[in-house]
Length: 194
Image (cartoon, rainbow, N blue to C red; front, side):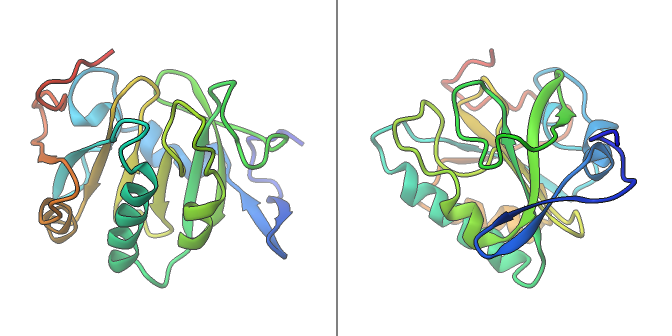
């Protein structure tokens, strides 16, 4: 079987249950609508009401607390849905399911995509020694009502979703959030896109 096909779902056992591994079909809505560049659509399809960037704090500046706050805000938005969690294959970071088939997004980057939930997003990848912050690199609910994506070389995450969700992020003093419009350079002030 081709690991990227939908012929039969692949699952892996973790935390006492089978976890469905995603396929390219599960991220086609992202892949088909994002284009390389400096705008928010390099990470987020242009299908949402609002967009923002969320700066990832430096390694020793509360990354775990930062992730927990982000996950709490996303949970408020889609409490009862399963989430898709994507783990970017950097060659150095925990993929959670290292033998699982990969999906391809953005500039040909490989991700392990697994259907799970908020609790797993908070604890599955939590290696504080990593150069990347804890948690998934890609998160979206089953209904695609929002998307949070952290591209390989960026020091910020990109968010697309309902205006109310972006507003909730903007209200958090602990987060460095900047609203972004389609077509505008999404690079936060003081940062460099690589």
